[in-house]
Length: 402
Image (cartoon, rainbow, N blue to C red; front, side, top):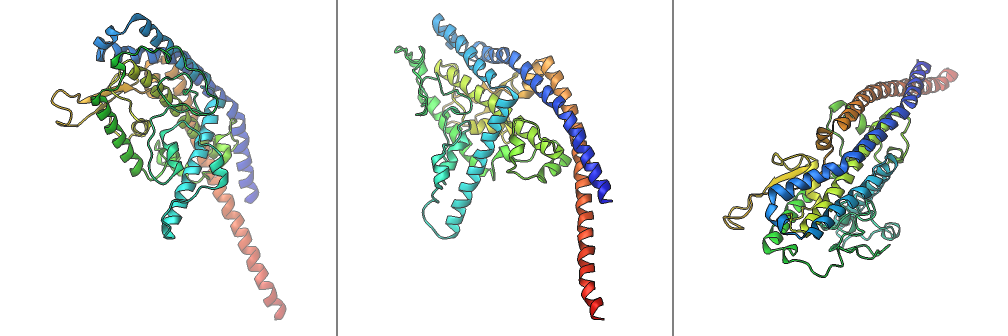
């Protein structure tokens, strides 16, 4: 029986190893089609914001600034496109995994310090203090200390959006000279945030801080909710296995499911970072009401915040402020947020690639379920074998004495 169970496990591993290259090619094809249509999707979303939301402001911009904005969109999309490969996406997934480990370790140290009655914060170890946190999410700053710190800075090490973005702080490493747009001394007054924009920004930060405090763990490490069966399968895997974020697909079907989950999360992070960078550019031109914190964008993507109906790749959020900003205050905010579902809806080729991937995902879940079942059966058989061996060993001295 044990030999049969082991044979079935080896057979499933062999089958999955043969199917892994096909899955890898389908993922690479999906990213290729995504790269080809990404610029058009960003331009369409920005077109709606500029012509339907704030057409007066866009008409007031001089032609050279409008042209510079179009060029800037192309540059941002091009930089993101170079990072939309399987290897680059999984590289970001590995950064997210390490980031989450540091956050959990820091939280554990703070908790232990509180339980021990220490008043100060737990000091980070020398290894973690010397290694910089990988930027690319607003939550990365939380690992620096026990308090919640929400940053509106763009991701730097992960997506390279720190370079060439005027008006934003840049990291000390690898500085670059400012672009022509950032060195322009003549900035219209509309570029400067008004008191209304500052109030909106503070409200956005308060909402994002509440979401940060209310979350029990990093949402990027939560089990997927596609089905209870998939959740059960993924819950049985170790969280710190480096194979789930390697650039190559693991052989184990259970690890492949988690690898795929990390891939989807990292891809979503890439699109969110691009959305944030474009929103920064639109805010500089006065084409946006405010800059939503990335924590808030993550909450929308995780389904923690309900959004109003909006065109593809746009996010519409209500602003229930009452009379805080006056009777003429805006009741909602509309901003750019690229999502895979919207991109697939607008692009038939991308939608076809997604259907093929979902078929493979269903087949992989079925194989993972069978693999897990045979693993449990083999484990039970081995435990029975050990039990009988121990039982026979204990009976031997009694027989000798008699």
